[in-house]
Amino acid sequence: MKPSYDEHLITVYHPYIDYDQELERSVLGICLIDARSYSQVHGILNEDCFFVEGHKVVFRALAEVWEEGWPIDMMVITRKLMSNNVSQIMNNDTAYYVAQLCYHVVNPSHFVFWCHMLRELAARRLMIALTTHRFSGEDVLEGADMIHEQLNRALQIRQTTDWKTTYNAAHELTQHMDAIMTEQHVGVCTGFPTLDDLNGGFRAGQLVVIGARPSAGKSALMGGMALGAAMQGKKVGIISLEMTAKDIFGRMVSRVSEVPFSDIDRYGLTDSEQQIQVTKGITDVGILPIYFSDTSQCTIHDIRAKAEQLKQRYGLDILMLDYLQLVGETDSNRNREQGIAQISRGLKMLAMNLEIPVVALSQLNRASEQRSDKRPNMADLRESGAIEQDADIVMLLHRDWRVGIRQDMMGNSTEHQADLIICKWRNGNPQDIKLRFEPEIMKFSEAA
Image (cartoon, rainbow, N blue to C red; front, side):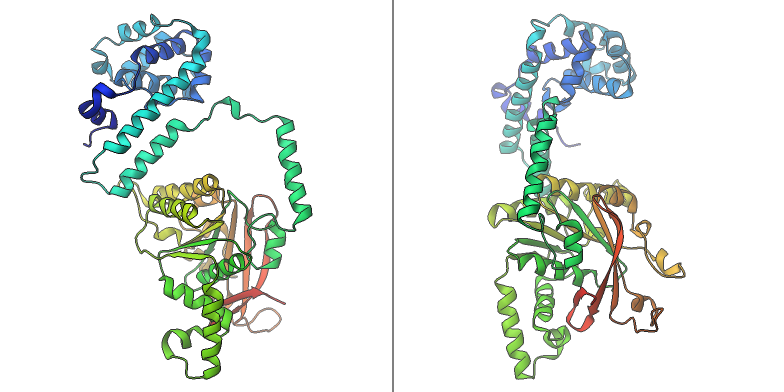
């Protein structure tokens, strides 16, 4: 078992650690005496803000009792601690340990201030851990990310002061309406006019999921959206776990130059006009603010680190991921559904924290191909529960041609037909957008 950060600190830097045992006792004592106090603590502290191990387990018991809806008092907390089998931490006298906490309350009117002091001390301890922790036997990036998460938890304010008045909300709404009046789209546009008009562009904090069966063209659709955003000056990050940066760039050049990707990638350019078109395409795409990461192995921690680095170094307006099910697990003990849930939630939190839209491609299962019309629905997303919950927008790409339907109801060939099925849109109504697909140049566009 790895030593905890507290154990590491005690071993290496105990004389210099910033902690206040009396302050910890006073905060816990007030919670035990006045049951209403915990609602304030819940918004400011977590158990990591306490240094003494016994204080940690008492705070954990307070949280459990509060979440279960039981009243908080000395007797209830003592019984909870006994049921948690933590008496050894309390010198085998849980009742006395809890009672002693109540004797250290000095002036409860300063309670909230004390809570903020504890959080500040916790942040300082975590900074020491950040500078002294040795990552032996674990992935360095994952270990650093763990410290980063703990530091954010200690620093992040979640108390009731985040309540906004109707005046605050009115001001935000007015600003939003002004933005709509001055510019048609308030988010990142994709180059697909109907989609952009429906949503006003993909907005900061949104998780957008695009699902499709293999070979339906979801990577080509994402590439087209990336080009559309970049051509309007938006900085686009693409994390691909399936294709190299060279291949993604080549597909974009094929789309812009209208030269078949197979000629660029395999057969070579024998026609001088094609050579001119491709050279111009390379130049046109090459000046766009698009950034690629094409590692084949990546966890949600890696994705967050990459996105933060890109935003700090070049700026970042939208992040695209190809594709969700290829993201690696961070905990081998989780089943696949739990792993996907962690990844999905991580992408949503990334979108909110960096204030950007995140577009994630996702595989669909085979269920749609068993239906008579072959059309997918949201339940076809693999490990779909968490994805459906976390996503603000879910779109499914469908091509009749790919599933063997060669003609539509009017007798027209379906080779170049595609449907973008919007089956979840948090701020609007589900609908379909008709697309045209040109497979030779990997190009989707809106149908005429």
